[in-house]
Amino acid sequence: MNAKRAIANLALTEKEAIVKKLPVTLAALGLIACSGFALAAPEGDAERGAASAAVCSACHQADGSGMNIAGGESWPRLAGLDANYIAKQLHDYKSGSRVNASMMPFANMLNDQQIADVAAHYASLPATEGKGGESADEATLKRGKQLAERGDWSNYIVSCKSCHGPDNQGAGDAFPGIAGQHAGYIKAQLTAWKAGNRRNDPQDLMGTIARRMSDDDIHAVAVWLAIQNPTAN
Amino acid sequence: MIRKFTYAALSGTLLFSVNATAVDDRTQQYIDTLVELGYSAPEENELVHIPPSMEDLEEAELHPELKRVIRRGYDLFTNTQQLRGENVFNNMNCSSCHLGEGRMPFSAPIWPAAVTLPNFRGKNAHVNNLEERISGCFTYSMNGMPPEYGSDNMLALTAYHQWLATGVPVYPKQPIYGRGFPPPERPEELSYTRGEAAFQENCSVCHADDGAGLRVGDQTVFPATWGDMSNNWGAGIVRVFTAAGFIKNNMPLGQPNSLSDQEAWDIAYYMSSQERPQDPRYTGDVKETLEQTGPTFHKHSRYGQIRETDGHVLGDHSNLGDKTFLKPDTVRPRTFE
Image (cartoon, rainbow over all chains, first blue to last red; front, side, top):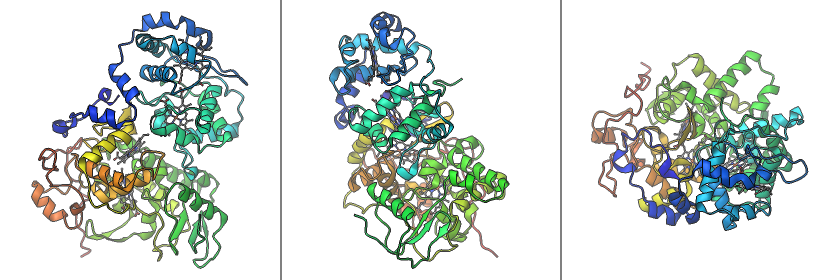
């Protein structure tokens, strides 16, 4: 994934900076599956992906907006998420490193090429609004905003935005946009991390934070994020 | 396993007697949380201060205009990129190194400067005040040009620093708990190649293999750990022990104290073996600069030394990053004569 990063202002380090030690990286990262896939990933085709995604729209909807289901299992918005992030999740469901009974059979249907294609398809759709935060009270929203933008260092809860990027709209391909995601889904994921049921994040980065959050904090940040803009402008 | 110490406990704006035997609940909880995160508990008689938060500011009984200026200082501290091209010429915010908005212990909390200065500083061998200390981080860590002494921005920044020190006595006699980036014990041997592998394993997901970090639009998400967009060779964090202390206590983000001492030092050694913009104290010759700054500073960094992997002499260049000047004119001796 780093190979893709813009290498800005290299004048200074030109000589040595691009000496990429890929084999070392791969061996060192206990993430051979992930990195290996990132390197070998087939080019995605959004148009072909639209066809493969027909079966997905039962839950994720044709426009990729998903659905917030109060009291049930929410379907995440996929529209506008980073293509590499989407592809990683599908590979993780397939390999069993991310576990979900509703989603697994659908991920299993897809081969590597189809994964790249549906990922490109959903990434190309305009992001839609998140639901589930409409009726939250002011105090809850205030706490949610604080956690998302500034964190709570008294419990070493680092702000969400320090990884999920400006306005929590995503940073690179490892840190997905979470602004404008459905509250029910955000809550379910944080709860899963806290309980140890989701552990496919690199280096336990997300799990470490989630385990420090109270259920109230999880609720607060989920409802606040849900009503934020998923994309700039 | 928290031993009850006699702390010089300063909780928020409340000053407890230095000899108080009981630590108040809030301070005890604060210490417990830090100990759970792997930090050492305060030594007996260390000064423990819980700096106020921005929420406390809203409640504080201060002139509304002062609150506004403190908020401005906070905003400059956490989003220093708004001064890009004027005072800041790399991708850093002050909070890129001073985590938790400058309040976290073991992440060089900034409030001690407000109660220990003016004082003599070995780095520039004269008495510095708070403005000059802040200017130091602008000059080196931000590879920049400090806001003018007495300017609105400088005053706002100092107001934020000083307000964080609310309740602490000036020139405290006790050592300050969690000040600076205290390094773990130095292992016998440091290794570039081990450091490189550990960096790629633990750090690259955010800072990238080439240390360039990540920006989204005009905002820094992950600051550059070396290269043109990082701090220059004169910044405190290029000292291997300071970097090791920073890393052990603060990185990977959200996971303090998760690396072994050996890993933290190896990574620090590896990071200090990469190029970055020239030290503003550069005389035009790396050897000469090293002679002048070595005893007080560069004896702890890799500046002017040969990198074992390729024979490159570190710092032997005149690259200034995005700046067009070598040093701001605030970098000058003071004689008080």
